[in-house]
Image (tube, rainbow, N blue to C red; front, side):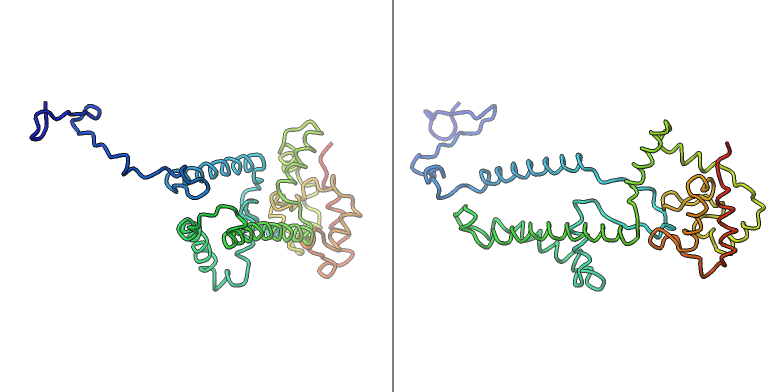
Length: 294
């Protein structure tokens, strides 16, 4: 069936529709970018597709890295743990350190959390439209190359600075990170043929020896319950030992030194100014008795 006024018009169907196929003269077809080697390339879809493929490869590599080096899972949050040093996952360390800087924190926190990231991501989105030069060699594009190098250097520098500060804090407070402490306890339990956590549960079930000893009143005078709890079972997640079975871990001489001079970089305070030498001797004698029943 013919369309239009010409009865001899040839109709070419496109698919199953009745849409007439339009032909464009060869002279009006723009030449492909391959006709100009090294001169130009269509941004959409050619160049954009390459960028997406590179982005996919980088993302997959990043995911593999996060799976192979997962962030350690610490103990449940404990508001009474004053020795806890908060740290984000390793791939956020540079942002964590960045937000400590003077002009992006405190009164300027909005600038640090919204302003600077907004400018950075906005510049990234606008980069294809701002950098419209045909030159693709990085040393022929000094502005974009310098900005990229500065960004990478900043990320590495802030990450290292944050990690060094974290290690310094651990040394000052004599703190062992929770995931390392957990691994050490798991190895100790395995060496004893116990399941992980079995030793801690066993220690928690050890009864106090000589609960009516006058030294128990000294634990109240020294306010031991403030850290070790009213049941004197301590807080494993905070690294605070239990009094139950503490005699199996420390000798009396060690207990005297700990009570007198403190320990743990200040986590265990010194009581030489709060208790007399006789009271310390009486308290540590009682603590040395706290052993597992044979």
